[in-house]
Amino acid sequence: MTDQADDAPGPLAGIRVLDFTALLQGPLATQILADLGADVVKLEKQNGEWMRQWGIFMARTHGETDAFLAFNRNKRSVEVDLRDAQDLERILELVDKADVVVENFRPGVMDRAGLGYDALHERNPRLIYAASSGYGRTGPYAKRPGQDYLVQALTGAMWLTGRRDDPPFLFGAAIADQFTGLHLVIGILAALQHRNQTGQGQRIDVDLLSCMLAIQQQELTVFFNHGRPLERPVENVGHPGITAPCGVYRTADGYMILAMFPCPALGQILGVEWLAQYDTNEKMFEARDTVHRKLSAHFEAQATAYWIDLLSAHDVWCAPVQRHADLESDPQVAHKKLIWEVPCGDSGATYRTVGSPFSFSASTVKARRGVPRSGQHNEEFRQRTIWRD
Image: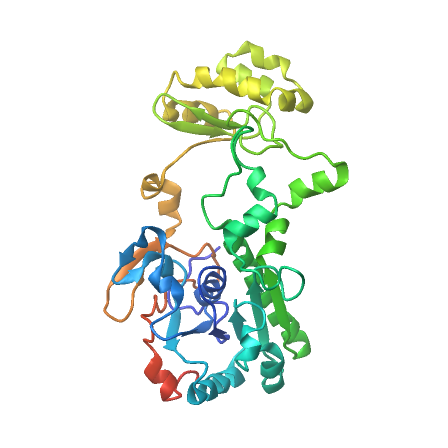
């Protein structure tokens, strides 16, 4: 792979996106498109979308919530009133020039505003209309509120995490929202390729429920074909379908994690003879709690770094359990430059965030615009200079 040239365009350069999204799943999807070079215009309500007013700890940087900063770089912002005839006229002019429209309202909201798929497709048959919702456009749940935690609960995912006697566990990040956002991007890219081949746009629908089921394909395939629910372990093993010696172990100064590795081979490395008896996958699964309890006492004798060095020398799958504070000094994170400093608004201020995971040999993925303040590009919108051909 060659080094990226800083002035090389992103691979989606020339793609124009009208972004009606708010909160997390939609803004993540449009941020990915923007990172890849698409020209994204974010249409917000007066005083900005809801995420500008809410976030973890209500933390703010340069006046914006960190939750908003996390998902809205590389975009322009225009405040619009969908009930205002002039604003609606300007939006429709942008629709005529757009490649993609993205929205994550409840089903029917865009139709009532005169901006649904049928109306926009009639104006621009090449338009790709991507919609994300909680449960899909139809069905008994279609009008229900769709939110990450609710879908984690509905799909059984909360029973896969934690120990046997624990209550259901929520994942520590918005996994349903973000997995759905990724599927939204994949659908848009597929539709762009379809348009390249046929000249026709189309509608894409993704939803939290479908995507949260899809993230459990392995676990649900086992259940649907064998009728045997996965039972969580008693100890801190992790995945309910995993075998010994997997799990989180306390060390003398912290924690480490072991992934799949044969128990007899691990016993030879550690000098622990009793591990030799667990010499099949069936035995390692049945004894996962016993092995974890007995190994825990062994690992508490030395520091994490000692065990990681010893086990890594024998190609054992292991890692330290790090906190967020450890990531800034992690050598691989630094090597891949995964922490970005991004412009915020038009004041010259910057904030730090996680960078894009993409890497291309002939394209550049970087912060081109930063995160706009709400309505930063209103004047361009009013003067009709956005996407002027």
